[in-house]
Amino acid sequence: MRHLLGLARLHVEDAPTLATALRGYEAALEFADAAHLAARGPTVTAFASFDRALAKMAPVVEGTAHVHRVGAA
Image 1 (cartoon, rainbow, N blue to C red):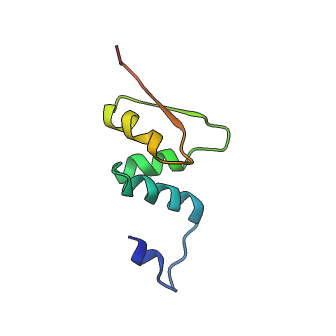
Image 2 (spheres, rainbow, N blue to C red):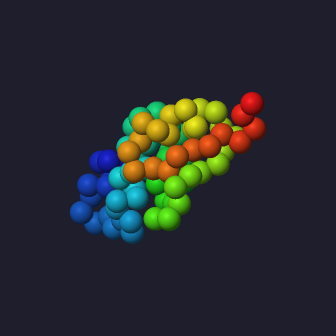
């Protein structure tokens, strides 16, 4: 994916958000999860999910919101 982003004719609307999402993906998050975490607004400090793996892996990605796992006992 980084190769595609290096193409001269490709325009990325929000490069910093995409860069954060790619870091999450490279750190073993699913790309959709990484994109959701990266795309949060500047005032969002937490993210809720039923996904145990997402809650466990999200802290390794700098610049993303804290993930609270819903339904955890």
